[in-house]
Amino acid sequence: MDKTLFTYTLTPEQGQTLEAVTAGMSALRRVQAPYTTLALRGPKLTVMLYASGKLVVQGKEAQDFVLFTLEPLVLKAATLGYEEALDPALYAPHMGTDESGKGDIFGPLVTVAAFIDETTGRRLADLGVRDSKTIADGQIQKLAAEIRRLLGRRNCAFVLLRPPTYNRLYGKIPNVNRLLAWCHARAIESLAEQRPDCTRAVVDQFARTEATVSRALMARGRALKVEQMHKAERDIAVAAASVLARDLFVAELRKLSGQAGMELPKGAGPKVPQTLAALIRAKGPDCLADYAKCHFKTVHEALAAAGLAARAPEA
Image (tube, rainbow, N blue to C red; front, side, top):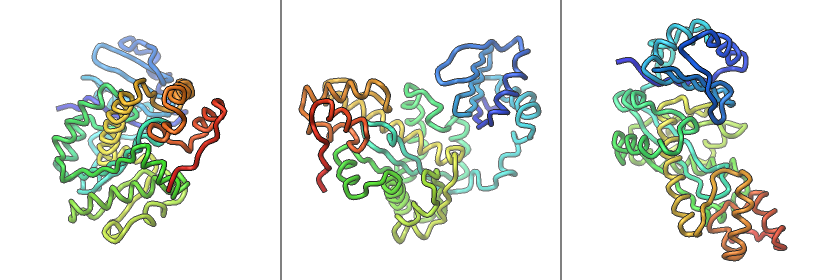
């Protein structure tokens, strides 16, 4: 069966080539889509190039587009059908970790570790599992449910830092990368307990030094080969962890919104200061530690605008 979804990361030059190559294709029409620099739709094909360089090719004709257009004319490399030859470790048993909520002022920080073997890895790929940043939140829930059903509890572990816990830990570890390393290390340790046969973990390299996560590991985790790489979401285990982490983050933010009595926005955009101000008016400044990551500059500015000083989190 032909695959119907492909993801790539293009250089700016490759993006320009893709635009030029597809300009004369009458079957594809250019459309507007959020966060894209090029969005094309046809009867059985969608091509989305995001500002980040992420390319998503989807539809019944996606495989033909990759084989006969993308690879020979844009990528200048033949990879489809040769994935395992190019990367023998692609479906080898291993775990991957990823997080969600790092850049979101409201809500928790969620870190997930997911273990795959050859069978589950191939089935996840067939499901179209990929970096959660390329998937709308409305689709995340359904895909995450499929991943959980496929992997089962033994092959997943998560670390959930709700805002009160996050703020207390940040008081002790006042560095986001070190705190992230601690979370990834705890997720790795937890899954290693459940999967003592796992010998390898893949982690997205979020810090300048690769030693960050390794230093945070304890005895069981240090027995694993930990590989930190840029854009690690191309690894199927990391991609699965990415989807599971985003799904849990969205669910937790929804619960927090219910407790707050108002919608808490994702990210750090223009709605955030307005919501912080509304929370301060409705519940007082001390409530922010229950809903937000309080080390963000935006939180300090909201408190200052209300004539208040930011308080250091209690240890």
